[in-house]
Length: 126
Image (cartoon, rainbow, N blue to C red; front, side, top):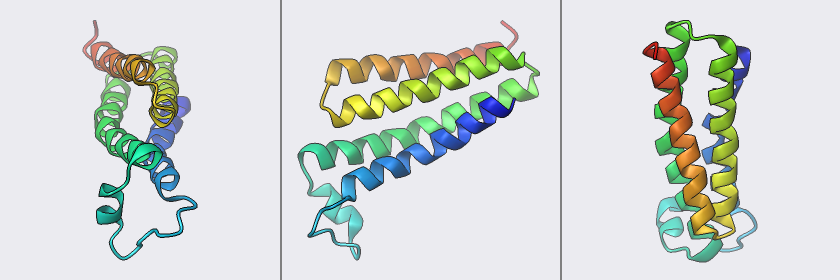
């Protein structure tokens, strides 16, 4: 179960990696009004901010899936496969978002979603 729990930690940190990418190295970054500053960004920075928001949105569903699968005593190997698949898909999602590869991003998003659905299905004993 440690692998799945590690995946929850990694998934929880991914939005912060996106936020760092959105803000890194920009000379006119306004730390007094970061949300307003980010809302005005375009290109790479806007995509990094969108990836951050999406990563926060996806996290709760994933974490709940891991918790429920753990409580339902789903086999550790099955739980780990879904959890690692989610994290790999989310990392690929972020990379494709930053690289402006919309179709690949959508595929990665779907793989991540399906891995979470797999956690819930496993928790239900199906």
